[in-house]
Length: 114
Length: 115
Image (cartoon, rainbow over all chains, first blue to last red; front, top):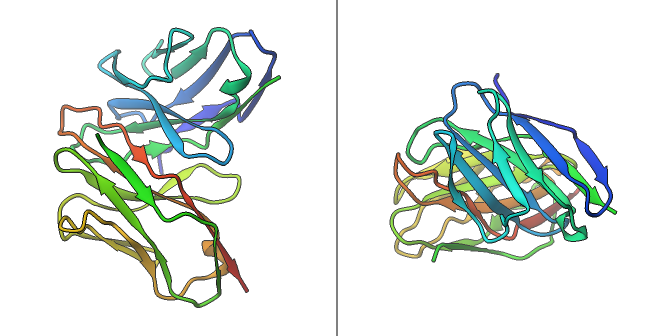
């Protein structure tokens, strides 16, 4: 069964460093998403991506964040200068082009900023 | 705006007990409603969904009915097992085919089942 994959599973970085989180969505899906979950809190939407551009972004997704689909298969989230409060689990998701369709989530990348 | 409010946890039950986790929502338009489950150390899995009023989603013995009149989507299971211990998230999306339809999650309810 096709699934969304994410790498790495755990990333440790120093404050101020750049990190890139990688995702491979399911191959025939059209919509792509990043969410994050700070430990013990709710899952929060960061950004959605469709047709090679951002569809919607939340207030969390400021100028320090960017997304890219560089080669038609990978979908990346970049944080330019990490802060302590960026420590969280980051989930990638994708869905086919169906109204009300299910989003399929990857296993997540745990980002720890020291 | 769109939001989801769900029962705070943690909820601790004995095996074979009846489970209800309450969820209510506020939405502009006609949302699709979901329950996601997160087992310890794992990502999010869709448990069940309902896309229109009076639909009942069901999976693995869990059920939830889309109640438009009470804006609710309560999760129920008749007899829980230890393996059901997890965090359960109620969620919604709003938007049509052309919309990216972000998911809005509730705060999650941690369920622990005692043998």
